[in-house]
Amino acid sequence: MDCVVGIDVRRRFLNKATATTLSAFDAFSSLSHQERSSIADLMILKDFRSGQSLTSVMEDNTDVFFIISGRACAHNLSPSGKQVQYFEYTAGMMCGHLTAIDGKPRQTETIARTPVVAATVTAEVFLQILARYPSVAAVVMRHLTERLRVHMQRIYEFSTETVGARVRLELLRMARDASTNDFANTVRFDRVPTHADIASRISTHREAVTRELKNLERKEVITWRPGNYIVHDVAMLESLTSAAVEYKQAG
Image (cartoon, rainbow, N blue to C red):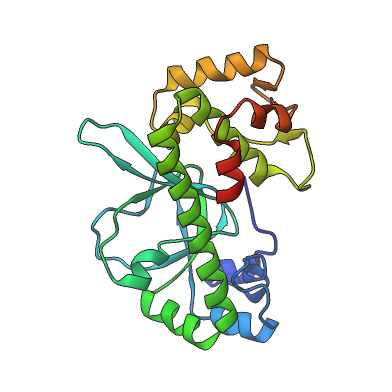
């Protein structure tokens, strides 16, 4: 299970976060141990079963969630029941902060994909933290900007690119997120979304994703099989994608 290291077992039993736990989050990493401890004292640890909702559409709850372990996905369902996936949250990320910031009802449901442990804080306290610690506010703004850029790029792709190109662009995003080296041309994934998840992200169906992944395997650009997921040639993947230039600019 994806996990932020440093969970204090004794404090966990008391349903409290710790300064060490919060050090793994970008938003709090620049704060002192004492500052993180003060924030941790305002939080409550909550456990969610796989399949359980962290947030629901139009609910009154406005808490912010800091994911300590596990994975969760923000999505909506169309009137026909088709899932539209927006974002996946993993350890070290936060969710639910949009409603805390603007006070409007939630527009997505966030479901635990695995058992999740999250430190939660009320919207009122979250806003107080942003006001008191400018470095935390700066990180939150940067994360919001990054997410906006990703969604703007996807809207552009939906309007201009073929399904095959959208699959390749999604693989490029995944490679960028998984790579620890900006110049790496080969990227191996420890975990990948299902074909259905990728289809949900790029507004198509699972069969189209499967066809394009098999096509890329035939070209020896990727290996995409259980336990062995690799992009062998990022440069080739970019060259096969007509929107590669726009993708780089948006990133």
